[in-house]
Length: 78
Image (cartoon, rainbow, N blue to C red; front, side, top):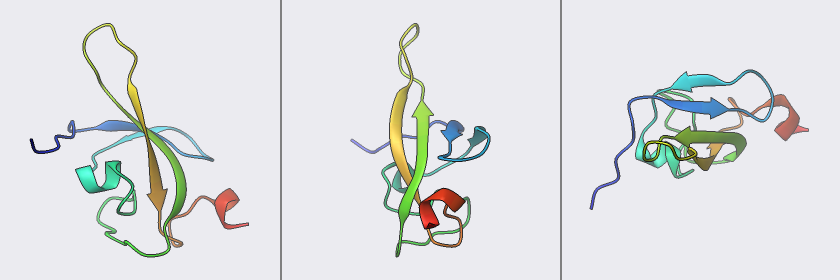
């Protein structure tokens, strides 16, 4: 069964303001940098979570995501 990602998910970064972004299944699974159009797969570190919708009336499902050194949150680079 192929992985399906909704058109937009809520990204709650480690630092900063939550935002809605479009991501791929690879980004959602933490294999690629969370920033759109980046594509980096090396040197990835924690970048917060994204939340996908589940069935009606249920809580969203959280996924840990990663960022490359260029897009890493300030706090994770210290």
